Length: 391
Image 1: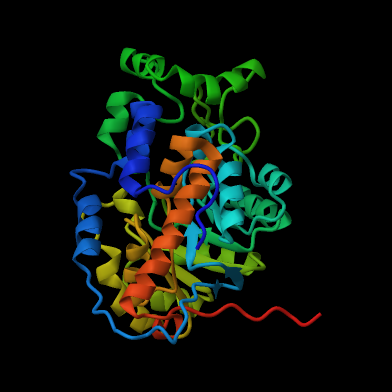
Image 2 (image 1 turned 90 degrees about the horizontal axis):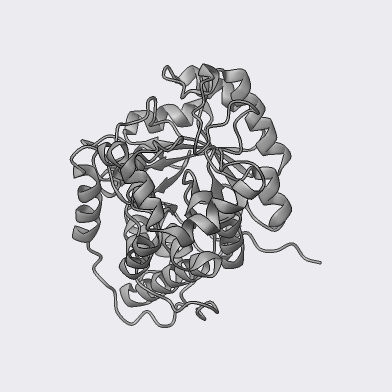
């Protein structure tokens, strides 16, 4: 694969180091760190590092092909940009930049309910984007259904309810640094932002000049959390009693493909299939929710067996390199989501950085497939793209 023009291709750690210099520490930690003692975060990495693939030799007569189709979406490789809250704080119009980078790489972009930029603005700015929409269910389900209709009206191809977050997990470092929506304007927060004035001028100042502050773009008018105001409206709190019955009602109302994100148990995978979901994402939420959660790479084989051919099984958490993608595919995933890597590229070098981070990941995947001897037909979860219709 030819490297993308712009910033040089770099490793995950190189992008991360540059992002750490450019972002306020509170925002960096919000993206980078886990929950509790960060055992799940470390476990995700350790188990991916421990996974091995025994290479097969002399496979040169079989070309490396990464193109595939997941849930009806053709893509250049089995990679989706994961939904990440507040990407619009990492860079000005950050969600638009990520959607553009994904489209340029031939990949889908999964937009978060808690994005700064709403889906309509992203569709207008990047009409060619293949958008999936991550859904947090609000306490008031009628408002949730209205958000689903908005996503469908703007061409979201796949709805991705996150099912592993009935409550927001406490993150002590965010509390100490005052990071959140809203920011807690204490001395450490003010000093943190003062030490990163270029970021504030790029991201915060344009909103101030327009008479506002960055806010969650999908929340109802008057109920949008901003950097200076919380959402006092209890109707848009996370739905604490989220149940399979709620997912059944979502399935009835959503006309497209449905992908449940955060499934970790084989019995839950079977129930998702019985309920009519089209796929699941095996996920530890990037080590950010529940510290005792097992590593997804260890859960995949049993879940893949339980799902059979009824579900597309994806995975996320800890994807840094192309070899990580291949390890998940080798364990039975149809594809992966990656969140931190494109955010670090975005923070380090804006939209070109996000594009370069993705280009590097896809180049590493091709190299890993070539060196392992594995090809698309050797990876049972990977579905080749449908051929283009004849003219």
